[in-house]
Amino acid sequence: QAQLVQSGAEVKRFGASVKVSCKASGYNFKSYGFSWVRQAPGQGLEWMGWISTYNGDTNYAQNLQGRVAMTTDTSTNTAYMELRSLRSDDTAVYYCARDTNDVWSGYGMDVWGQGTTVTVSS
Amino acid sequence: DIQMTQSPSSLSASVGDRVTITCRASQGIGKSLAWYQHKPGEAPKLLIHGASILRPGVPSRFSGSGSGTDFTLTISSLQPEDVATYYCEKYASALWTFGQGTRVEIK
Image 1 (cartoon, rainbow over the protein chains, first blue to last red):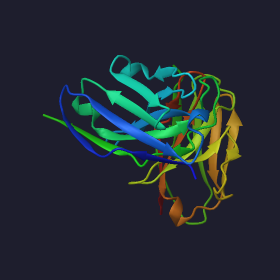
Image 2 (cartoon, helix red, strand yellow):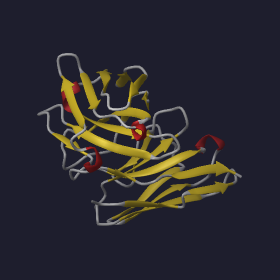
Image 3 (cartoon, helix red, strand yellow):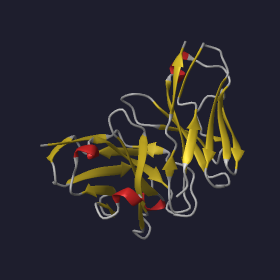
Image 4 (cartoon, rainbow over the protein chains, first blue to last red):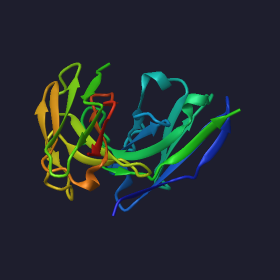
């Protein structure tokens, strides 16, 4: 049974960086990509970006370009999302989700991690 | 960028009612649309992809339709466990976008 387990909650200062991990199990890691999605308090879901485990290609949301980096480690079946220069509006629950490996086609995000709360404060 | 607009933003209906949520894309997206159910404290759940393909294990009271720019999620008979926020999502073609969500409550 496919499962994604994320790292624990983080509290960060303004301007710091955070790196969230997402360990996959129960399926062939290199057959699927990952999307990262976040939800700020009282807000809707926001797609942050996508990474292919096949070739490492990435696609990031325009509003996060330059601050976000997504990587994968096929030796440990783990995906990572790093967000830099944290601001108060980065306070959110961050989710990883299994997605397509093809940037031009897909079928939705069918397996989700449990979410990681990131709190940014002074 | 393609924008996804959902309506209504919230609704309240009685148990057994038929509920319809619409999602409109600012440009044609074919059938590259998914619907998610999100309950507080839980991860979102994929209900439908390809605009109308029900995921395994999702109750048959959920259905999706549409293509191009106009899409619909229908709950044929609302149940108490359906209380959640529902999101449409345009996927692939290099950029993914969520609608703003529709909160569904029981009257």
